[in-house]
Image (tube, rainbow, N blue to C red; front, side):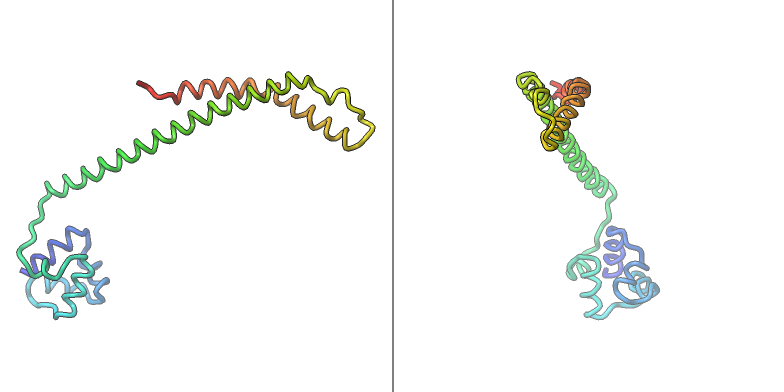
Length: 169
């Protein structure tokens, strides 16, 4: 009984005789003898086997453990179903975050554009004799120049992204 249970549990855990032997600090032939019923482990080793196989000693000594492939396949399919559901939820959450970030970027672009229109390039009237004012004026002009040229492209890309990431009913 012990030999059959030990072999069935070891196989169900996906361990080879060599891997179990390494965990128990014995040679592979010892595991083979135990599983063939040619010898029996002592009580201390039985506790070590139960720990290595993550199963109670009573299960090792109890009734025969029956391996059923149908149950294993069912358990695997249930785990895969849970994993697929978690991945789908994660993808939906990422899509929603991206959607709202794109909407936010459209709003930010519109607000900056409106601010530039309202301010009407005040730096053009500044006295550029002062070095600090000159640097600030050039910085504002460079920002405005780059923004006016690239913001429409980003805005178009963001609007397209909003439509691509919207929730489909």
